[in-house]
Image 1 (tube, rainbow, N blue to C red):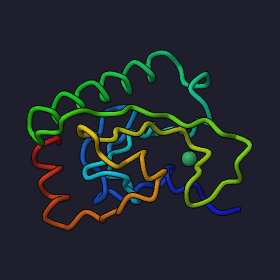
Image 2 (cartoon, helix red, strand yellow):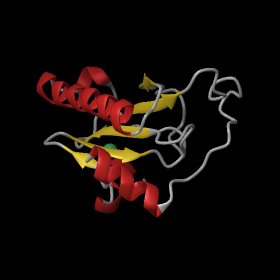
Image 3 (cartoon, rainbow, N blue to C red):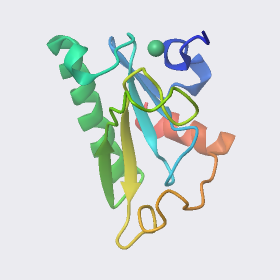
Image 4 (cartoon, rainbow, N blue to C red):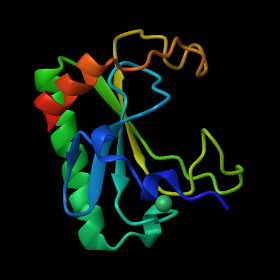
Amino acid sequence: MKPCTFCKIPKEEVIFETKHCYVLPDKYPISRYHLLVVPKKHYAGIAEIPDKELFDIIKTIKKMEKKMIEKLKVNGIDLRQNYRPFVPEGKLRKSHIHFHLIPRGFEDLVYKTQGKAKRGELSEKELRRLKEVLG
Ligand SMILES: [Zn+2]
């Protein structure tokens, strides 16, 4: 079995971290600055996360959302968590729970194109900026 990628996140990908979670850019962003908040411990679903850790994760989501709106001038953000144990583990489904912070704009194409919106990878410069602004 392949090791879980979210159990071993490379340090250079981490924008911000707390005692219980990491924040990093999504490798398959559906909009610019799409971030993931990932618990450090491996849990499959939200019900497994101890309350103390969940509080730390939610506080981190709150902090990131506030900073993204203030500093990155994002218009709005979708917060998503997909729990789909019936889908096989793969590139687009991880058994390690994570929360998506997806920047949104008025009449953007994120969902109109049903996931086929043009996805751009972050440049090194953009990654440095995220660490500087959100870290
Ligand atoms: Zn894991």
